[in-house]
Length: 243
Image (cartoon, rainbow, N blue to C red; front, side):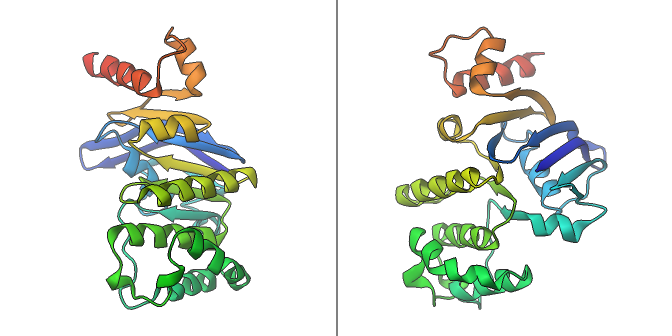
């Protein structure tokens, strides 16, 4: 569903991501992990076509995001770390706009269910300008789910959500996985990533340093079964920092 192939992104003389390759298959949730400045958000923005790769390519459902951006974007639902809803559109108008943009107006039959699950139904007539940070995050997620994309890309989606919102969003992600969608999630919440993700991709200083299931990483690092993803993450990133 999602293929990142030899992705490199430079900003002048600074290399943010270097020769990065990984995939997210159908029916899989992959966590994109790394310390601050590791290149996670740059990678996510390249996947979402907000940044153009310096070299390499990204395929969404077989469509190159650079050569065929319209088809690629149609396959993708993207939730940024800091959503910026249209201030003068209501919550419901946001969903109508997204459905119309992707020519999926028939999906609006699911609007009430999605908004209810995210505690937004009672705010369906509220303007974007009036929403709190957490509500804006929920609205961005609602727009992603109304799109019914093949690939979902979330950048720190749980930041700012209340416990109920976190639980519901994770449940909705798992449902989309069970329907065969591919989900990429960037997060610093390692305990959540360990429970939610099928595999993890770990970056440091713009480079891939490890990927695989938590179990496979434990075996590779000769760690005990009691080791958490946090333990593995700190060991891997400290090893690179010391090198």
